[in-house]
Length: 163
Image (cartoon, rainbow, N blue to C red; front, side):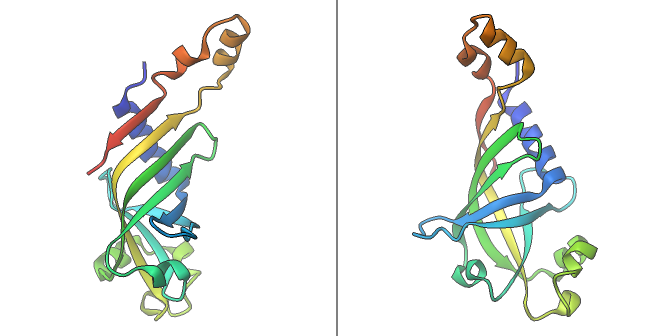
């Protein structure tokens, strides 16, 4: 049986591996939902999640302090899905930039770590809804044999507090 803690651990493992999310601001008609790459600093789970962006993007320009935000995530194998709520803010911590900087990030900024367009976003997660894919081969066979799929799916979802 899968527990909420198991699903949360799977979420953090998948985020570390897959890293691509859809990030949006709450309370926006257009939601400014954008694909972004997240990084987790160190071994700590539960965040914050760090995102390199540019000062001239709509998302960054829409930030005025700390804003309510959300992340929509689907793992590469589509075996795990999540919606993560929290807050998003600009962060200018050079030590974090230095720790997270890599060749993939550097490819986007001609001026390197001192590029005037560089923006570091900090997403502090507060809660998550997590779903594990219930359509495994075993679940399919059980369904063909007349089993109730809702029973198998009952322990494949979790609502977890992250802050």
